Length: 132
Image (cartoon, rainbow, N blue to C red; front, side, top):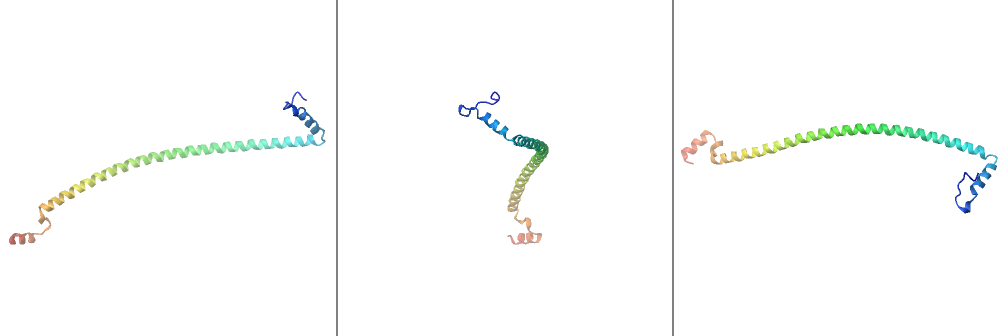
């Protein structure tokens, strides 16, 4: 038996062999060892089943994440398109605002040059007669 067990240190030389002999000498030891081996096998089977379930769940989650990523990418593309349209509209509104300001300025200039623009014909005639 000493050929199969490694020698750990000189102080423990022969210790595993002695321990195995003591365990083998116990009357119930082999039955308990078999029970423990059976329990370990059952645990390993359960662990493998759990691993399989976790792997399947991980694959499912991976597919769901891929789908979510594709949808998010599509949404981002739509947002980019909306952003571009909004930018064009904003630019056009700014142009219109400049044009409205220019029209107002021109209207103000005309109003100063032709002050009677808003007056009626009677008021204009009265001013013409009175000289004022």
